[in-house]
Length: 249
Image (cartoon, rainbow, N blue to C red; front, side, top):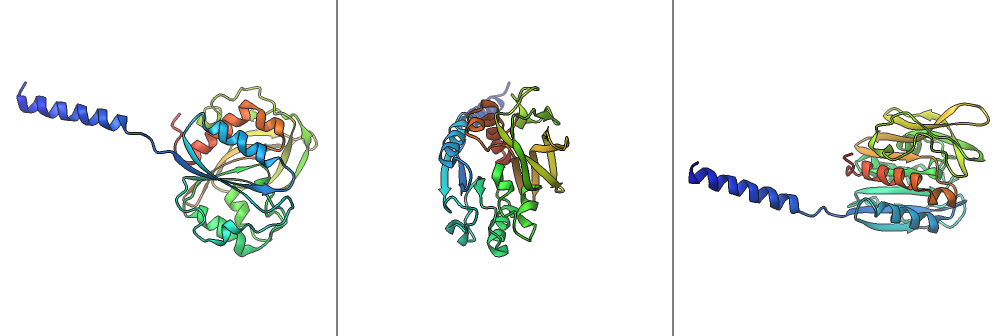
């Protein structure tokens, strides 16, 4: 074996070791929350603590807009509101905000490539709007929900990495089932639950490609009990990692 070959081999080995030792940069995540109907401080604490089990995350939490159904929060006045973030979590609830310009300042940032997680009442946010931009971003259209109950969840894509660890017989804590009117192109339903009223199965966990951005969504997340449930917290955390491009298995 020549000395030149040995030297080259040693250089490659050292380089590989140094490369393997490089730390992974923390995720930069923004959580946007507020509006009516939910215990948002509790939900924010539960979610950020759960995600911390999978990754180091630098969080920016924006809770604005009060507790009503109509608000235009100052964050979105800046067209670069999402610049520099690896993922944005939408857990807000402003059903009666309708301004097209305001809504499009949000969706434009995501369409350009900012990944997103959308939880529960994000699906009913801006539902009074006449434009479909927000609904297309979400990947589903919903305007109403069934009563609170404990809903069995059926996995459709059982081997998807987001659903790793979800039992085949998981039943939610007391929560609302959202009625999905439309599934938009680019959306893949990962799991469904069946309405106790109309007997139809509706997506409750999904992935979506919106422009250049990955979007992960779930309609569950109404109650404190849901945000205490380890199955829910795990799949939402893994969905966040998937959206940000950090989930390999």
